[in-house]
Image (cartoon, rainbow, N blue to C red; front, top):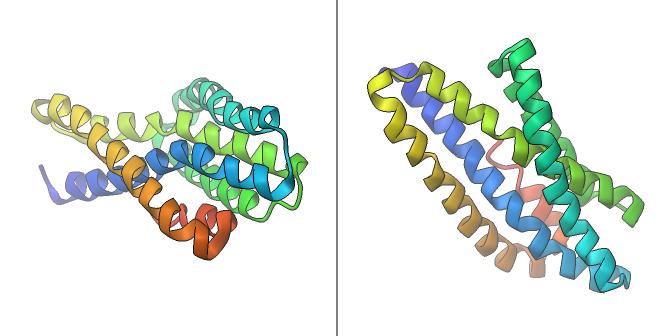
Length: 170
C-alpha cells in the first residue's frame, strides 16, 4: 500500500471512530436530556428511535447519492451533515430542535458506509478483504471512546459539550 492509501485508511478510520461514538451518543445523552427537560420516557425512546431511523434512511439515501455524484463528494456531504447534526443538537433549546438533529446524526451513521466503499476502491485487491473487515475495529473503538468521553464530559461539559466534542475526528 502506498502513502495515499495509508492516509485514506487513517482518515476513514477516524470517520468510523466518530460514527461508532455517535451511535452510542443517543443512548448516553437521551437520559440526561430527559431529566433536564422533564421529558417522558416515551419521548426519550423517540429520540433514540430517530437515530436508528436516520441510519436506515441514510444508508439508502447516501448510497444513491454516492452512485450519482461519486463517493468522494458524497463523503464530504456526510461529514458536513455529521457536524451540522451534532452541533445543532448541542445548541438545541427545545425538543423540536433536538429531534431533527438526532435524525441527522442517524443519517450520518447510515452514510458512513460510503467511507468504507470509498476506501476499498483505492486499496489493492489483495488488501481489500482484510482492511474491509479491519474497519470494524475503529467503529468498536469509537463506541468505547464515546462511552468513556460521555462519562468524563457530561458531568463537566453537560450533554451539549459532549455532543460538540464528538465532532473532533472530523
